[in-house]
Image 1 (tube, helix red, strand yellow):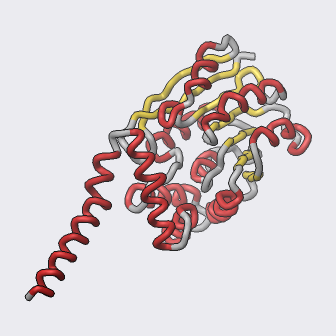
Image 2 (cartoon, rainbow, N blue to C red; image 1 turned 90 degrees about the vertical axis):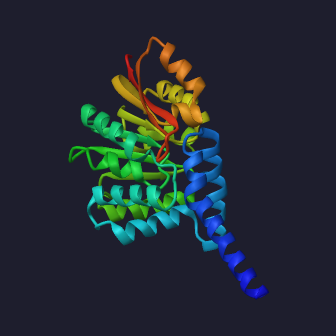
Image 3 (tube, rainbow, N blue to C red; image 1 turned 45 degrees about the vertical axis):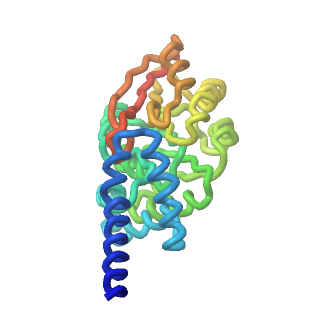
Length: 265
């Protein structure tokens, strides 16, 4: 009888822990920026990495290979969104802000695009799928593990011919764009890498002459985690005309947004 009671107690405790992990805590933290990032990006990721002996990017790639149709970029995007909403949060631009990204890409219709921060190529695929046939997208990723996963996601989406993925620090590669890739200027730049690099990399692009009159900078996560120095500069500089698109941190209810800034020359 005592063993039965103990068994029921263990089962009940396990059920309670699972409910907390799967529903209760995620429901609470989705409204709080700091808690959401700590829970999803530190606690859950670390726990699942230890339990599965895989990384979050590897699990995301597996979801793409299981659910997405090879050669269909939109199905790749859908598979990642489903993974992030139903299985495990990840730091993609996400479906809600992704629609804003899509609209800006469609509006600008760029021939040359620079993406700073590839991660697992979610936004890379979104952007490339909307580009005209002869357009060129260069995406920079500092982390070699993320870059390896991103290459496989890009290949699965069938967009390898439109995308040049480059590994290394943005501060090293931005000055080499003209020499290495024959780029004169970028029509669109999507900033989604380390937040403390937004401002120095923007100034570096200006110094290197990579922005022309009419070039558009689109910056993610300007509220959460936040880029106050970048926003102060870009909103007060006479060289830019900026607009804020209010939204939410990917797959949560925490306020975040995208800052669209047109370079005036």
